[in-house]
Image (cartoon, rainbow, N blue to C red; front, top):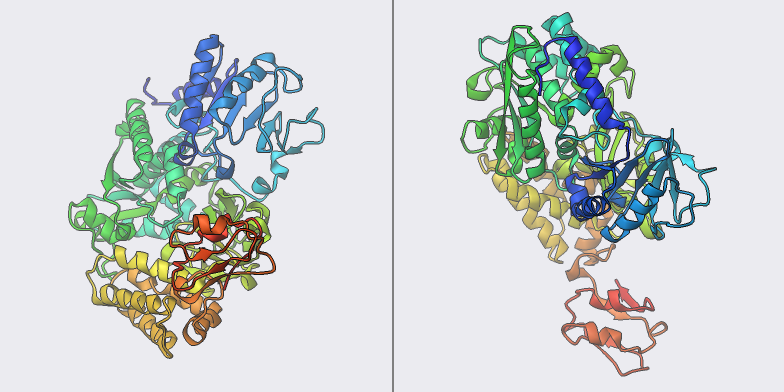
Length: 637
């Protein structure tokens, strides 16, 4: 791997990268992010490798990151000269021989040999990426371009611009997509103040949850006293259901590294750290390889691009403590101490890692920096909302049809994410709420579905942006149980350093458990509200300060559910076991005898072709009878 010291070297690497991205022979890429591997992509990759070798086919096989549409993984992308580009969804190893047949025959329109995808979704592309659903059509005529596919139509790919397109282990492919040209521009044509000014103009706010203006933080760190300064990347993504940062580190690690180098030059730092949770082994592996490649090319280390600037990065693996996502707890962990936060009046830009000026941003924030330097702060600020510029990456999960990684312009309404991109709620159920901002976020009700997704609008609604998790809930979700779940999570993740968080969150969990189990009392709602205020005011860090959000937001928007649990001893969503019962509808029961066979306690009973019953004393409410009944005869209320 040759050193890169001048523009000519970058252009040579770019040419190599373009040849790798669009080779003169067929290339197959498999989405091998963690989500793809979990869906079976590893098995598909091995089957492709075996089939290509067996046939001695002149085909290149490569890995790539997440393509975003995780609901149809494993995804296989095929690039063949003079042919439409094809990306197959929900691929299995058994389908591989037929796919190779199709590729080698040179046309997707030939009747034989064909491949069989079943009634599944997959994408077909030509000069424009194409998409269709179901069986292979007779021709491509009338198939929509991928830009018209609802999942992609309203997305704007900035931070995730390379995910699913490049091989994350190939630095040349990153350079071919414009990588490290921003670094060259920054080090050879811009002063540190000019870089910071561009970031200020962009309006970029921290994507880790706090939403603090990145440029302001950079300037404060640069102006802080001290010769030794640090830049840190927070990759400790601990929110349940969130995987935005993981996907970026896995699919495009060089964008994070380049952003950090630019930031370090602007701030005057010569050492950097990427803090990644231990549960992200693939992210660690890809980051490690990317750092090694950048060093080998002279883009990390001494005298980068002959500019006289020295900078290097180390990776530190966290033990999975949720509280280490908080800046001061993260820095304590980096120092080898227990991950506990400290008082916020001590600013990390002045007294951070080892008590020296330190600038911490999360993965997505750093990944946006090369684009801002390449195109200018004014370009970035024109995207999104005036006070929340640019785009935001979200992991869209829960009760929604199109689960996946999405990137949208700030200010987009929740409705567009849930219904247009997400495809709405499965099984025709009603949308009830969406939880944003991770376990410390709030639950936003269906009546606020037009709410713009901005830092300020989400905060006004009782939630927050957080790192970017979005959990969609339908009519069958109990909001009291949801609050209990998140409070239980936060209790277990509290470091226990301060009393309001340690004792207050624990007590809130106890009250919520009582309500869910039928022991709720009058005054419990008011007690929860009072305790929430005390915890917010008295907690040391953002974990405790935001912990009551799921409780306060569900009380605010779903108070009637709390009251039903307490006063009527009923769970309207039929979720809380202590407050529901199972019975058989005599008008629908056919006496098939299936529910007695699956009931583990013998509560369901009855003779064949006679109406069955459920003994409430024996019923443990496991739901086995509901799942087995073919006639919807089991009523849960």
